[in-house]
Image 1: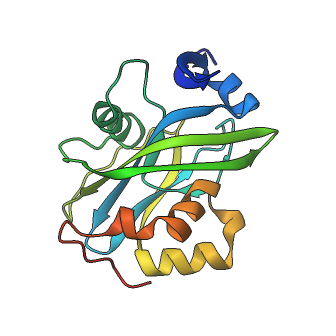
Image 2: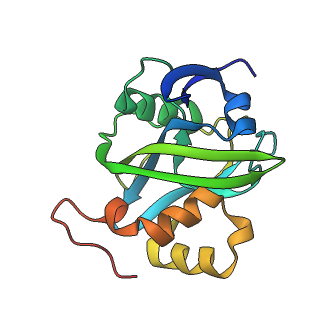
Length: 180
């Protein structure tokens, strides 16, 4: 794994190899995208070959921006690379920070730019099997209930997003938040 991602080392944003970032638990830049269709969110099951959190359900997509890549460009790039999604207009809804152990001695300590995009009913998908095992649309309330009931099936960050940042992520542009 030789991908370099922006991480803070001794207070300075520096390109660091992705696996080393997670082994050392360094705070690093990230992007998460939630594709919505009304009150349903598109979630993905991470591919079995992922180096952390394989086989767990997560938000539509999440990743690390490349050095000097804007968060919006990163969001659009990964929607295309992971799910074959093109033509959506992700809307930046805010920034969150979290720290979570993700197994195998790895830690996510992310400063995440969060994007939400509304999808048409006939959104075509072309899954990249190296990234995504499967997808499904799920009602947001049902998802929150299932994550709380059976968190071992879901990524640590999805549980954090739903428990701590639901109002920020899922509020409509008019500020209305779906019921809990």
